[in-house]
Image (cartoon, rainbow, N blue to C red):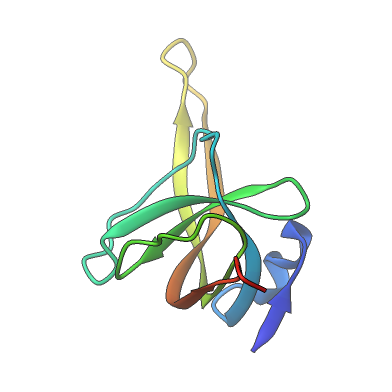
Amino acid sequence: MITITNYSDFKNNLGKKVKIVGKIAKEIWQHLTTLLDSHPYMNYFDLPDGYQIVIYTKDSISCKENIEIVGKLIKVEGKRKNPRSKIYDEYFEYQLVVDKWKCLDSE
């Protein structure tokens, strides 16, 4: 398993099991999302380097501070649509399907 500390590490670890530490976001940015029947809970997750990703979990996360999450890094793709243009740009985001998580509040 690979520990990721920066968003720039995501590209080289797509499809791999990774570990990330961060916090549930208090301010939500706009993101692509997907539906995963196996992981019905979705959270916005702030990384230490200032980036934010979407994570999917099997159960609700109740942590108030730092969280360690482990899961598979995925790429969610879509198209930007400008109704005034005939150009459709491909767009993607890295996101995480979480296998397990633990609160680091008390450490």
